Length: 424
Ligand code: LLP
Image 1 (cartoon, protein in one colour):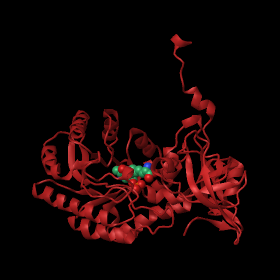
Image 2 (tube, rainbow, N blue to C red):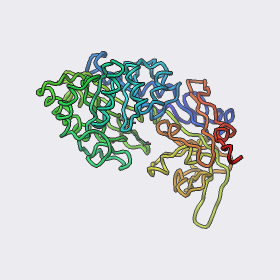
Image 3 (tube, rainbow, N blue to C red):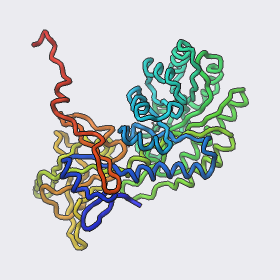
Image 4 (spheres, rainbow, N blue to C red):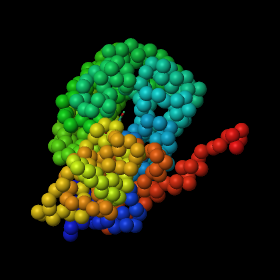
C-alpha cells in the first residue's frame, strides 16, 4: 500500500501531513518514507529468501538512485549491500556503515584512484567493463599484493524495451563486454596477477516493465557460465544488475515473485551466489518532491502553474520526457472540476516543464503540490543550474520527520568559485 495518501483532506506521507513539512522547511523539498523504503527492500529480501538460503544472495542497493546517508544507513541496517559507480559513492557506502564485503563497484570509466580504493578496502567485487580496465585492475591489485574478485559485466545484446537513454544491454551501448568475446577474456584473466575472475555480471537497463528481457539476459548469462566452467574457470557469483521498473502513471509493475522465479529456474541450477543491484524500485515510490505554486500565468489557450521547483531539482521530465504524477496537497472535492495546467519551473529553459496538461483542481498561487514517485534519480541528479541551491531532504517515519540534508546555501555555492590572482 502506498505510504502517500489523503487523510482528513490533506496529503500525508505516513502520518505526517505534507503541508506541515513544507511549512517548517520551505519548498522545494524532497520527502521520503522510511516505511516504504524498508518495505521495498524487504520485498526483494523475502522474494529471494523464498528461493535460496540467505547467505547465497546480496542485495546491493544502487546508490545512484538516492545515496543520502540516512537512506543508506537505513537499508544497511536491514541487510543491504551497495552498488557504487564512483569513488564518491563508495565513500558514501563506507560512511553509512555498509560492510565492505557487500559492496560492488560498477561503471565504465573507473579511475586508477577509484580502483586502488576498491582494492585496498577489499570490497566484494569489481565489475569490469573492458579489457584495458581489467589490465589496470590487475596492475593496481598486484601492487597492493591483493587478490581482487572481479566479474565481467557482459553485454548480452538484449533489448530491454525501455527508454533509449536508460537502455544498456544492446550491442550499440557503451556498457559491458560483448558476451561473445567474454570466454577469451576470462582465459586471459585467469593468468593475470592480482585478480580472481569469479563472477559474471549483467545489467540491461532500468525501468523494465516486462520480465521477458530479464529472462533472455539471464539465459544468456547461464549459458556463458556453463561455457566458462567447461573451460576451467571457477565462477562462484552472478550479478543480475538493476531491479524492476515501477509505475509512474498507474501501470502494473512486474511481479517480484515471478522475477525471483526466473532467478530460481535459470540461475540457481548453476549453484552460484546471486547479487542484485536494485535502485529505483527501492527509493522511487518512497519519495515526493514538494513544490509551491508561485504564479498562475494564463494565456488564451494555456494555463501555466509556475512552481518553485525546477529541472535542476528533478531532471527526469526534462531529460527523458519522464512522467510524474502531480497531486494537490489539499484533497480535491469529489465534484471538483479539473483543469489542465502546464506545471513549469522557474529555470530559463523550455524543457523546465514537469507536466504539460496536468489535470488538477482549480489551483491558486501558494498552493502546495506533490510531484510523485521522485525518490529515485531525483535528488541524486539535482544540480545547481541557474545557481539554484540543492533542495532540503526530509525523512518521515510515522508521525516524525527530520532533515536528512539541509537546503544548500547560495553563499556556499558561490564561495566555491575562485578568482585567480592575476585577474583580481
Ligand atoms: N546496476 C547498474 C550497473 C546500473 O547501471 C543501474 C542503473 C542499476 C544497477 C540500478 O538500476 P535500477 O534498479 O534503478 O533500475 N537516471 C535514470 C536511470 C538511470 C539508471 C542507470 N543505471 C532515470 O532517472 O530514469
